[in-house]
Amino acid sequence: MTSLLPALRGASGRTDSPEAVRFGRHVLTYAQVAEASASVAARIAGAGRVAVWATSTPETVVAVVAALRAGVPAVPLNPRTGGRELAHIVADSAPSVVLAGAGDALPSALDGLERLDVSTTAPAGGPAAAEPPEPAAESPALIVYTSGTTGPPKGAVLPRRAIAASLDALEDAWSWTGEDVLVHALPLFHVHGLVLGVLGPLRRGGSVRHLGSFSVEGVARELLAGGTMLFGVPTMYHRLAGALTGTDGPGDLAEALAGARLLVSGSAALPVHDHERIVAATGRGVVERYGMTETLMNTGVRADGAPRAGTVGPPLPGVELRLVEEDGSVLDDPAAIGEIQVRGPNLFTGYLNRPDATAAAFTGDGFFRTGDMATVDPDGYVRIVGRKATDIVKSGGYKIGAGEIENALLEHPGVREAAVTGEPDADLGERIVAWVVPDDPASPPGERELADHVAGLLAPHKRPRLVRYLDALPRNDLGKIMKRSLGG
Image (cartoon, rainbow, N blue to C red):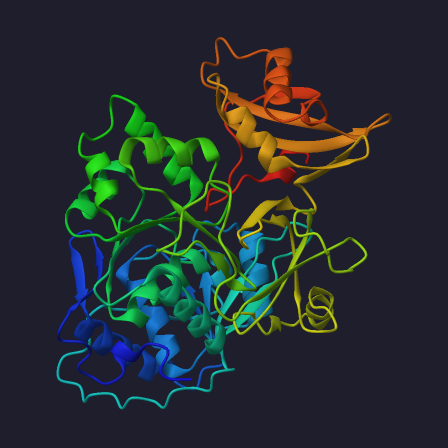
């Protein structure tokens, strides 16, 4: 494998496109990132693992780049993680040091770790640090902890090979070059914001403008100021769609989105209703892609392809994808719902300290069991139906995907947000439950009205049998609906 971050190999960094990262007014050139990260890399060389207090700041970028250059696995820590979970992650990954910004207040769960404050400037007058050799392709680059839905979070070990393979596959799919300027506001403790949103531009030699926190105004401003790509999650695109169709959004938002070369949504399914609203207002479709912590990127709509609401595109170059039945047999009919299994250079090497979980995650022929359910269109576009555990409702002998019911509910003018789960039913096996955030809480659409609406769009057996109203849906930091909190 060639260098993971070729633009940063050598002390001088890039000179033809100097801006590497921008957080508000704080800009770091490639030379500055190279010098600052080289200084930190020299101090952590030989460490077993390092933790990174992954705030949305340039210090996090320098810290992660330093670890990659030193060949030391980095463990990004979510600053919003609770004390018990954080203590588990620290005990499981056993880092020797935590990298943080000088002004960061760290929780007591990190008291036992040596702290190294990261600066975005290299010490003045010091000798230039020698560039360490490029680590082996299979050596671990990041250990990213998955959300623990059935137990404590597990650390997915991501080798340098997987990161390079996914980013290069996206380069091919999205015609991603060093001329691109990526805009996003994604957190930097997860693969979406960190691997795709930071290491992606740095591998290409382009630049990234991080908003710090998401705002419609910030997106419009940065896209109009030269941004060519926007990465976001459905919650962000929902707010953009609302601003486009409302009266209080920035007047130049439609122009900003229409002028972007690529709008990309990921981490969860983008509701069809929001996709259609953005297309209607801007003429620009949002492309979706599908990945996981353990697999990085599996599929993606190509830049030269047709964005199609409800699909995440075909498999990326190098990725093998198949659908299987509950008994593990491969589906002959791709239009049928099956679990996605993938194999390719994009896969992680295993869960840290969990050989049992690693063995259970893989089939005998090397495919990873994603737990995601999908169908495949005749042209190879994948349609994610939902998670095997929470998004498939088996009702009255039918296997029903929650996603299509959610999209149907969102087409009702009285529904702002919707989620669908199943719950035990003595007659049907499971009954469909709709969790609805009404557009007007004082006058929500009735249960029968919503059931008839869904039955008219889809089929009678897909109508919700019960509707529960909420002020808001529970979501995690990436905007994913936490269905287990709903009882699904």
